[in-house]
Picture (tube, rainbow, N blue to C red):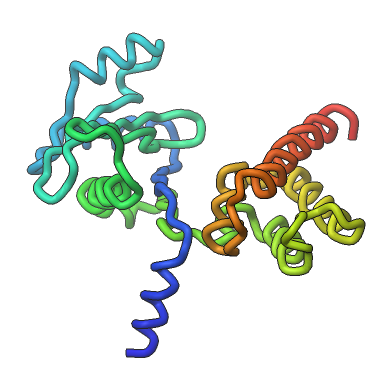
Length: 232
């Protein structure tokens, strides 16, 4: 019982994100899988060929690498779910609601998870497929990568939370974090860093300090990535 309570507390305060789904395999295998889905019959999920054709035409994409499904299953927000095959795999690129303006994290993730259950799970034992469904409650290692997360966590724990990186020692740890992020090509984005500081580390969102730090992170990593790519 105690573990259930602790897990509930963790989930209630953990940072929530939109999940992502990707399947890696050869292009031929992914096209065949997508075509199988298009011709399947699942209650509440209807392949929309006209929208698929329009999208492929307007984006100069191949129709067999694109799909739109009309989601109208009970318990889910009605929406269009879009899939696309590129060099990185077969992925859900967007879920667009039809009756509301915007899907919150739970609404979006519920649709994606249901798509995963209905369409992907039947093929999960196929060893040719590498299936990735990211977590709804990622930790900082998921967001940044382990090396970057270690440097970020060290800076955050020891820095002056009134100014972040203005003291010399704080600045050195900040630079270690930023350089590591650039060297490892960390996927951590500006807004994810901001949400992590505010939602998980309880920094005060005064519209100045956190935004300044996140702007610096974005600008400094972009500069370093350019430097490493062209001069290192």
